[in-house]
Amino acid sequence: MQSNFRLFHLPLAFLISITILPGSAIAADLNWASKSVVKLFVTQQSWNVSQPWSKSRARQGTCTGFFIKQGILTNAHCVADATYIEIEVPGVADKIETRAIAVNHQIDLALLQPINDPRITNISFIELDDLPDLREKVVTVGYPSGGRQVSYTEGVVSRIDVMRYVHSNIAAPLVQTDASINSGNSGGPVFSDKTGSCLGVATQKSTAGEGQGYFIPTSIIRQFLTDLKDGQVNGIPSLSAFFQTLENPAARQQLKMNDKQSGIRIRNITKSGTLDNVLQQNDVLLSIDGKTILNDGRVPFHQSGRIWLSYHVATKQVGDKLKLTYVRDGETHEIEVTLKPFRLALIPRLPKYDQQTKYYVAGGLLFIAVEQRYLWNWGRNWLKNLPIGLKSYLSTPYGEQDLEQLIVISEVFDASVNKGYSADVENIRVKNINGKHILHLNDIIDAFENNTEDFYLIELEGNINIALNRAQTQAEDKTIRTRYNIH
Image 1 (cartoon, rainbow, N blue to C red):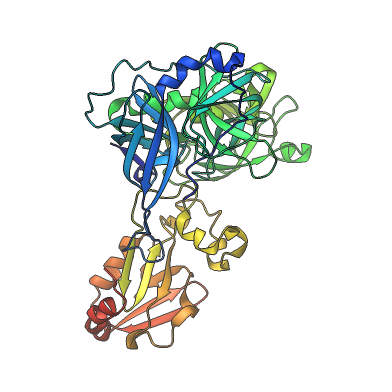
Image 2: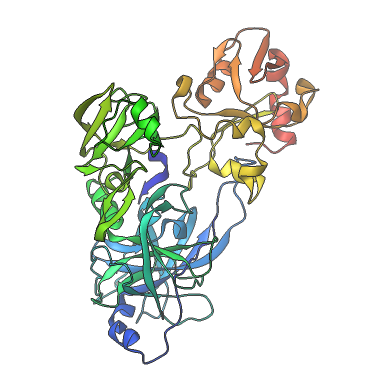
């Protein structure tokens, strides 16, 4: 997953907010914070996954960020696919060019740095606090749309849980507040009304209900800042396994658990992940990091609450040790594992922001490695509209049958050499070419460039075959690329 983290599509702005009236106690208490909060002006240009040799039209948007000791903290979605970034600093007349020095798209965080500008002086750095209390009042400071001045907004903490980040499609800790949402404040600091200290970064809103907004807690922010101390971003680690809850008593008995034990069953383990060659299918995890795992997969948490067990993984670093207790065949074992980078499904859940889609063109056939951005071609309801040839692989673990990427033909550019194939062969897994198993896009390249047979024999899933004349394929290649402006 290293390709989605950088050192140096979704709307730019989400805000947790209702406006506070001028002169209120909350606004007065946090006036100092506005001097450390900046407005971001971002130009973004993403890669076109349908024609991966080109980029989409550039677009502009605004976000919020704030000064901490390490730089300017903001959301990753604010600077994803960014080609140019400027900030508006309080007290400085002109916008200042800025660059991203670290980005983790998993947890929607980025660190920026102004480009050698002496006009930034006497900046107060915002300090991070711990987790908020439930029902604690919080205040967000930022630049929502509809005005140029800094705005103070408020809400109440209603939940702390592991939830899906819209930007990354990955579940990680978030704090929910019952405040309304305005655009433009993504990346802004969220303060405690009680202590005046920073509790997190505003990040997204809920489309499932009214007045539900979310911010990234400081436990995840600290994970990000600690991660980049060695000069690279490894991201949050993962157990890299699929689990099944065990709330049914018969299920626990069948797995030879005793009446005092609770936990969750390992359903599948991802190749090269943390638990690969350590645990196995049907093992039952009983505890993690010294915390008892309940039958619904949660562990005891802050203020007598419960939270999904991955909280104790996401807040650690790649390379950290983690203690686990598990049951196998009725016997209890303890083990210490080394946490590895996040890796789960064959089709990565994390979109490959900032990167060109990997592709290869031969005989007018466009081969690609399927990733999240490609699935968006089927619209807002892509999960419902996906072709069966793609949908059936959404839950396939990485490394199953040694598969490292799902390779499909995304488009057929009509030419004499591929006559008669057209859309009938699109979005179906490519299994073999001239007997060579296709496990990665590099296998496609090797199969075409090192083949000496008279024909390229391409076998797709479902016993669908394509035959291309090798000499004709090579002869028409330049003409096809010119005709369709393929680079």
